[in-house]
Structure formats: C-alpha cells, structure tokens
View 1 (tube, one colour):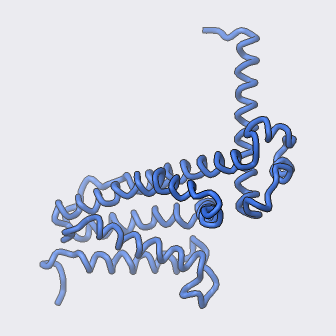
View 2 (cartoon, rainbow, N blue to C red; view 1 turned 180 degrees about the horizontal axis):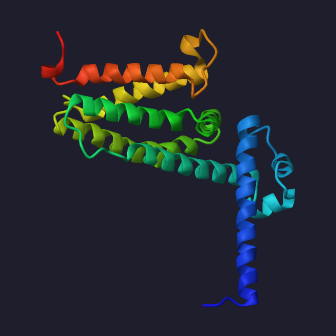
View 3 (spheres, rainbow, N blue to C red; view 1 turned 30 degrees about the horizontal axis):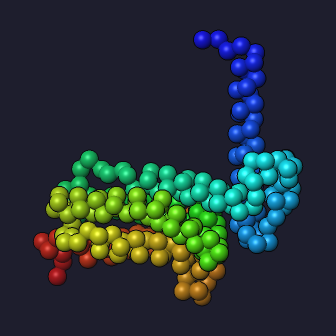
Length: 230
C-alpha cells in the first residue's frame, strides 16, 4: 500500500525522533559512566550530543528519568548478550571431553560479555549509584541474573544427565563455575592479578590461559570417577 506525502513525513519524523532519543541515551551513558550521576547535568549531556538541553528535557523530563531509562536500556542489551552467550548447547555431549570443550567455549563467551568496556562501565555505574538508586540492583537481578542463571544450571544438569560430568547439585556447580570464570575476569581485567600487576587487556593471551586453567579445574572436580587418574 502506498504511503502519501503526509504519511511519509510522519514516518520520517518518527524515525528522526527515535534517532535523537538513541543519540541522547548513548551520550548520556558515556557521560554518566565518566562523571557519575551527581556530577552530570543535562547541559553536559546536551553538549555531548547534537541536540539542545531543551530537546533532552522534552524526551526525558529530567536527569533522573534519563538516567534510569539509560540504565534500563543498557541492562536489556547486557541481558541479550548474555542470553546469546549461554543459550547455545551442543547437539552431542557424551564424554568429559565434550563437556570440557563446551564449558571452555561458554567461559570464553561469558568473559567476552563480562569484560567488555560497556559491561564494565555499566557495572561500575550500578555499583556506584545503587545507594542512591536502590532499584538499580533489583533491576539487574530481575533482568539479567534471574533469566540467565536457570540457563546455566540447566546446561550443567544436561551434562550430568548425559553422564559427561558427575554433578549432584547443578545450582551449586553453576555458582562455582561462574566464580572461577567471572572472578578471574574481574581480577585480571579490572583489579590486576592479585592487585600486584596492571590489569590485563580483555583480549590478552594471559586471560585466556587463566580461563582454560579454571575450566580444567572445574572439569577435574566433576569428572566421572572412571575418567579420573589416580
């Protein structure tokens, strides 16, 4: 069906408004991450975008509404990335080697999300602003942790059911697995190894070596008795 001139104009106007909103939110996240909530003004955000302060106000009303909208959108994007990382399960997982291959690939995909600059910045903003906006942690738990956690538990339960690993409590094993993977990523990319060295780049070979070692540790802990060397 053809769109008349008025309809085409309305579509173009809607797209333009959406593009402005997206540009404002992108700039706002960068400014909030760099300066913090308190030190950021609507003028700062307007200066980082090709729009006026009034345009920012027209789209969001005030700084707090803009801040919460930005964090909500970034959390949604983080959830999508984590779902993509955790929802893939191989067609064949019959042996401990199959499980090792799968869990190493999964660890690398989770690390790629966790250690990305955007996720790191989002995590810092939430941790810093949670005392002032307690709903942020609740939003993170409900929108990210709650949906992703069952997927990981389910994957470990499937490995156990296939006999590839000897896991009696998939929920506990999932916590151990994430502690090994995410703990190492945080330690090496943000803190520095035991806080004694400068943080590594997220693509550094040392990080992948550490991930491989931790997955191997997890596999040794849950390998079926018959496959363990004594």
